[in-house]
Image (cartoon, rainbow, N blue to C red; front, top):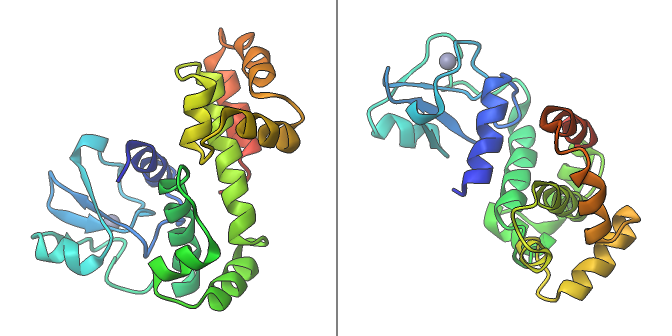
Length: 205
Ligand SMILES: [Zn+2]
């Protein structure tokens, strides 16, 4: 799992969100207890967490199920919600690669038709739209961070050619990557402000 993905899941554990319930299981190394990511118990330190993608995997590794969140029972949002979260996780892990409805469906071992229909019903838009949004969000964040070149950022979100990346970014946001970077650089003295405004733009997920 890449660090960005881990960060995202850890954030949702800290907020006790159910986004990743049924998708990942939180093994707490200090207590040897496995929880749902949404468990109401005190949030473990990140270095004490090992994530498992199946409950059985955590049990095999010697964890005992938490009595509070009962990770062995199906989640309140049902298996379809877990599917949508799994799609988001896959998208987040493969932003730099070619991702299609077909490749997502294959990774989840379901039909593209079922994936498209279920995801749209749960989330309100298609996996393709989600992929675009995730790429834009990742590019904006990296541009604002200022750590990588524009070419590197383009390639991190799936564009081999920086000029194609620039054209796409501008058509999606109305700004070129350099304009976006400049307009965000002026806010860098207030990292918390810019972070919270980005979080708001990210919607409710
Ligand atoms: Zn728990």
